[in-house]
Image 1 (cartoon, rainbow, N blue to C red):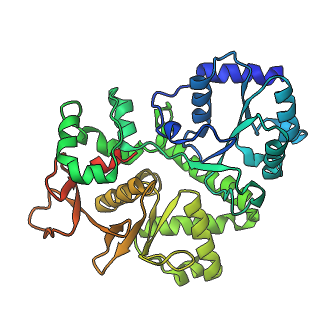
Image 2: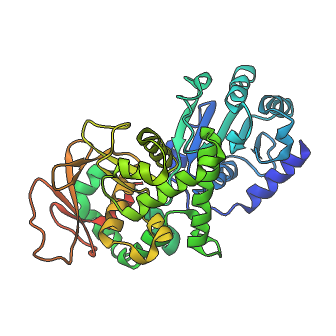
Image 3: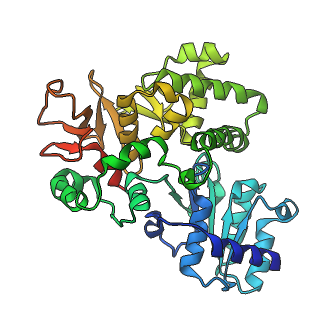
Length: 395
């Protein structure tokens, strides 16, 4: 136990969290079992350590961070460890990468039943279906998603500002006023393209090649998160990777499921399942018409965030596609995005019609009063025309 406490102290003391994630204030910390899901590289470990640093003194032995990568847990279960921790006065156990422990959900249930004064906060992959696939956790676990950096968080990090998020309704109704609060302090256009290229994943701060690091992370998402958690045999990995590359190369559009099935030599149903796994891993987004959903074929498939575009196919990134990818990704946290009509307008929350367009394309856009125009290549807006970058302040 002493070795774990020493590691905890060192990690908390040296945690580097220059941006405080808004999820920290969205979680109800009174719950006894809290799951933090998120894609690989998104900052889940840092989030746990940041929580420990905020809530507890570094030498307070009531809180302990552990990682299931530790080989100790190959021979010891979480419940037994938690019992020993409680006997030492422990109250809050932070468990990183919980899915690395066999029978982790049953172990967490044992902890919940045996130790009523213990709170457990654990992290897991975005691929995990905490309640659907683990019925023993139904009714006792509260699940949250940790997102990559928003454009707001990226700007705060790069400029030292402390801009707060705005609701979508606030942005739509008051965007001209909001912009007047932001522009005197920072020019968003100076940072927007950098964010589109490399601002979503926190590891852009590391002194390594970002695209190479992101490619490595994407491979780990397929090799570990999808194969391990979904218990898919290793021999199918090349099919999943080939499918992902084909979808990325094809661009944001409706997929040809029959052609994809032929290309990766599998069935249409399997292709749809693989697409769902890639979506759960936060590598893809599936956009459907209103009223439709998986397992039907989506109206459009696009990469989950714009950084992925530059990692996979950097010399052929389409500007319009990158901007629409940013739009969908910004909306994804709290809003439902669908495709509507022949012109493929985006419909948000079933009622707000959006079109993403270039502010410099003068004369090419016929503006309609029933549509919200999210425009790039501009920092200002008026009426139903808002600057696209401001939607990066939704969280």
